[in-house]
Figure (tube, rainbow, N blue to C red):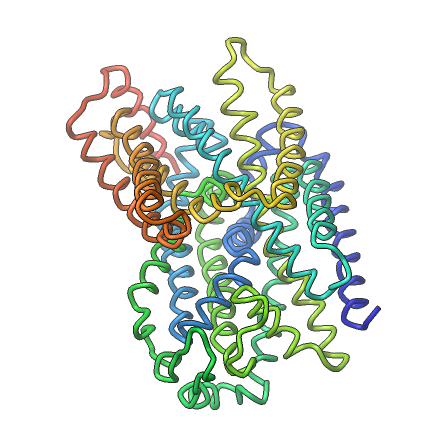
Length: 518
């Protein structure tokens, strides 16, 4: 066993023990469904802020987006990190956090489908939204497992990828099933600290590399960069240093909108606002979360922008997804300090992915246990039965994600390309307008959900029939942005053309009294 492998294995073992202990500690605090799903609505600023940030950024950001966009765009890719921090975090907290906390508290809503049912008095919306969450978020978690397993296999080439995926799945299941939201919140705080330390260390190490030359040499070396003759995707130095992405400006804007505004409609992100305890915590959390996202987002894309310099302009054998792992091995592969930092970075990437996975699994499990099954049953489900069912489903969904990832089922993996934009495109309109306007009708809200499905589903079907599914997958960012925009327009437009019943209008008036309270 090499030193990098030994150090990484020791770090992984320590990390696993800490996560398991947090799960055991949180078990006694998660005896009720409210505590298991939303921490009893009593989670503080620091924990909520870190939970929001760590759920936002998974290893996909580092290995996929930062590697790909940094390689192809250069320094302009950092704007994605800035957009995520300002639009996806700061603006989201300022506009949505307090209203979400107050309204979901008034409605006693624990999940996004639960919010739709109680806000619009529609069991059909609850069932439809729960199905959407289950279908499109579970495959997303499977893809994250696969990506993270491949990353660990690059450090341990003798170990099969499925072994690492099994370890990750088991670790996630232990503390999630035991402690629910409370366990994930505490682990997110630890994972967030690891992510900050890891990103700062990696930025320093990358900038110190001889091919980069520090901050002073970065711009100069990038501007002098010349692509290799056999480069399949050659770029010029002017492209890599262009402030606004150069020829990739349109692509850059679309990705900023998708990854930033997309968080406004994702149930695993919005759920953090259900749990925060008060307005004072929201004010502090807004600042903490924004700073966290700036560090992680900008750091990741800055690292990606140096990849052509560090790798000498040669794309690794594994393709674009191997860019960041190759950079890690090049920068941190030698010397004791470099090996220690490599172990820290591997735990960083593990932490980033596990925080996203736990949020997605908890959201998916609750959608079925709390929203879908009770809505379909004629008899009322007892709280203790819902609690047990939610724990069991968390375990089942972790297992399903693992199985999907190991089997490499094409349709399941491909769904990951569309999940972010489609789920947010369905929910963003009825969710946001439901917070701000009493005049939104049941039909208007339902139209917003359906518009997201039709926009992404219709465009995917059309492009697949006229070209190919891979061409449709390449257009998924544009589809997601279009779905979100259409949903935000359709909901108030249809509501203006329809009317609520007198009973629903009176309910809306009563619901909005929640904003009159401190």
